[in-house]
Image (tube, rainbow, N blue to C red):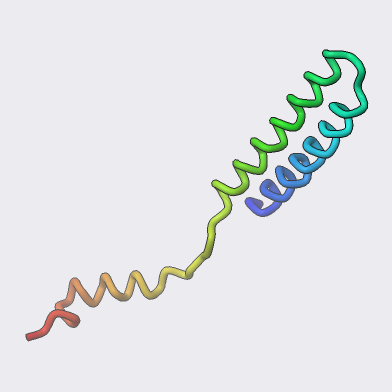
Length: 79
């Protein structure tokens, strides 16, 4: 489910950036240019959210749990 939300944000953000650029460049009025710039900014914010939320890597966590269990039993620190 998390992947679907990130994918939707990515697609929508890219569409907002592309559409905003087209609207900004083709518009003659100030209101159209402002709306285009706002769409570009919204798309950039969506991509920033994707970069912040997406994990760089994932692990199963088995190693960390076994390491903690060994420390608790005194298996690692033996003199």
